[in-house]
Length: 402
Image 1 (cartoon, rainbow, N blue to C red):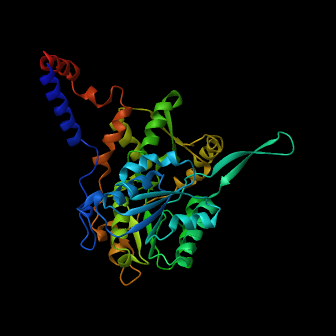
Image 2: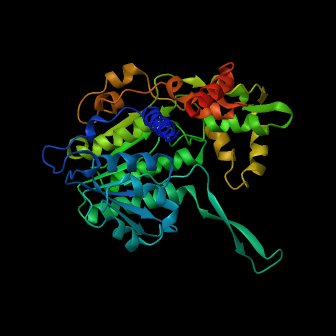
Image 3: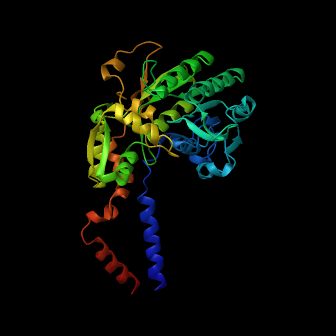
């Protein structure tokens, strides 16, 4: 009996290790020629990296990659240290340093940077955070903005760039967006553009990473469509202007790989702009239908005029983690895609805009990844597709332990 159980546990452990959701091992995990150690997390590549915004969606994957190559990493933390405890196992013992800072305290931000060779700025928020505050007159409380788009995307980014110049940091990697434009109706997109300009002015050698919308396990894109269907009143999911605007989502791990490659060759990418985008574009309606085909949710997609959706978003924006805000309505009403392949091919000279392909990173198709984290929205999970699975499983289990 004990031998049978031991054999079963070993088989299960072997199965789990092989069925990991992680992508294939990275080639850059090998030991660097000028570094030390056996390679991987126990190596010493001789690079020190400071990361702002490590607790975000993209940040955790960037940290995982940095830990995988053994780089010493300083992680800026604005809250309790336990908020980022999930990042600690990504690094070998002594290779990570968590530093408390305030985005309004320049000296504390300098402490995060310290003696870093490369600084990565991933700070960003898709909505303006708000907080309750005292008010001298009735009703005695006020709902004020904590960090505005201007402060998050421009002022903080500018401060980090200025500190990099003052502290003679070798390179700064600033993550912006392909939606960044001075002409966008979205304040988020306009401030992203202004942030790029501020960074380039304060630190002209900065490497600018401009991704489209990110998709991945914790995303606010595909998961949002599935969550909307799960909570949809009367089975209706609204589509802004019929969901006809285009988007070209990129896998978050691809963007993290690009950032890691830039860290490994910071000097080679000084002053460069790198656009990161997916293998194909979709309308938001097509993307929603793609999600519901995976999740077996079949809500009715209804065409809601932008003007109506703006009024709805004025109410939903007060949710703790709002699914929709007025600014998101503006952003999702515009195309969020890369330029044509011909445009990138025509770029020449020092100001050439690079793409992921120029760094040897191939865009991961959304069809290859989405099922891995969307099947949880199915009733019964993905096992409902295998007829008789549960009965067969129980029979085998009984045979093993007899």
